[in-house]
Length: 319
Image 1: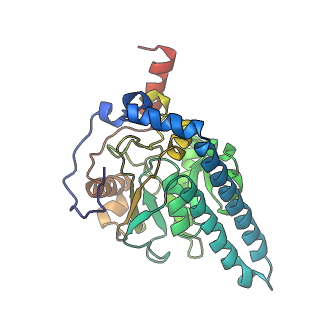
Image 2: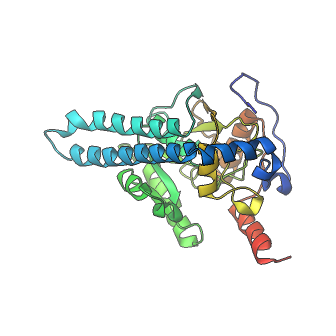
């Protein structure tokens, strides 16, 4: 399911129903081919091998990145060794993706320079686009949910990148996050900040409502869109409540694919109008519509709260 790599023009924006937004279209049980492939890759040990090498590459990248930061504190050696170490760390990140089947990344456009767009906003499907955007922007800061800090090796990356950690269940944390985003966006010496304004993962059939945090500073942003073409496996991390998978299941099925594809499109920097500078909700909605038009998918007003409500109904038998 290729969306924009072949060159179709952006289309009109439509509205998606809740059923479309909260569905999952490629369960294992829905395809005999997928079941047989998953069984063969698992029993052969190939999936385990791929995940093992990918984890090792990611660990090496994380350790190298931490070393780069420590070396950068040295007045004598910092300028000499920091950039080569950062390049090596990002190379390890790409190697990790290669090991789980992302052999080729199709890119269109280019990443903006920090003086052109301090904030990078992207649609959110899973973990792959996070690594790719982090690599393209050369270690930007980012906003991440507090639950991610418990992921293996992720805490080190978050620390090195000065990540903004948000507890999505606490209003005070969300408000603090918005203030910190605004502060970073206006710091001339700060690194770029990558934000996934949906605040959760979508199923590639629509874009969830964009939160206002990335747009509150009213500065130029760069929209970056990711598409993962698929036939029998949609790699979106939407959770078991939708009929999909949690992180372990997604990683196992991803590593069990023969090959996986991803397309990246860097849109030109988007400078807000006077009306958008005065209204972050308008700014967010317009950028959501722009990105949806390039992905050729509808938009929805669904948010993380809809996933939570769905999970409550499915797993606690609430009507």
